Length: 404
Image (cartoon, rainbow, N blue to C red; front, side, top):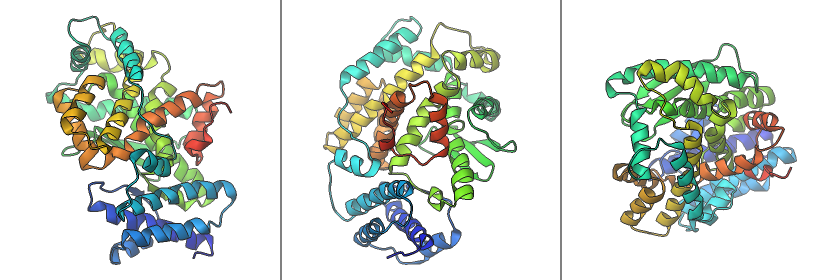
């Protein structure tokens, strides 16, 4: 059993690294963002993989002795509990997905009422151009009208860089960012994600964009704020500087993703555009700086309303994950996604591949539930202070009481 703080943090990191090795060969895939000491990674890589039951025991031992002040100990305990729950699942324990999510993500999960999606559909109907066809057809037509042509995809990094400059400027008004920060854009192929923000340490980060998927220029700021500033990259950079370098909280470099902190990270990502581009400011900036140069004329649509509706429709993915966990057939799941998330047949098939092949059934719950939690918590006069807290403090979903 650990006795010193350094020993405890070492064993915490080793637990995450060992559990990640177990998951690498499963349908879940890697679930760890690790930037901790290399010697700990090397130790975990060189040893024989430990069985899940042993990892669950190691997690239990860590929970019995957390040598840190109460607030930090509570944060760490929530993440050890998540790792213990995953280890027990790998060892054969089968919890229903809502209970599994409660223990890993620290949030209550239950099926969402479809009236919520009907309201989002009504909002989309009002936000899209008044063109013929079903709501799905109109949404896809709007997306296509704003899509960067495939033969111009190599222009995307420059557009991302322009958006990064503006989103950094606006985020810097909320919390100070390093003047020498470098954020690059890299186009990648053969990946499942649309975009990913990767903080590489220090002041360097990269936003990866999937060049194989059509890119909707109306989503440029929606994507860049989510992956960059004030979303994932900003959060990672600031917490590494303030918590790791400033306070020695090495656990911030051991980020097990099936855990409560990622509910808030994804919720922040989905709110990121609206935080720094309130109202119609994102649409105005895109019209002036991007769309006109690509021959895209205003069509009367409301980008902010479209994106808010799409955030709500992440709840369809959450419901689909629950249905999949019940063993519903793929045909039913695909029909549900098509009906409520307004996905095409190809998009529904890709969504099911994500839910099943990469083990996202748990993680996907973070998006809608994180967004909804923050939607209430940020609706206060001290909104800027709360955004700053999300970017600089170790918070859990349980810390976000909208009535505070």
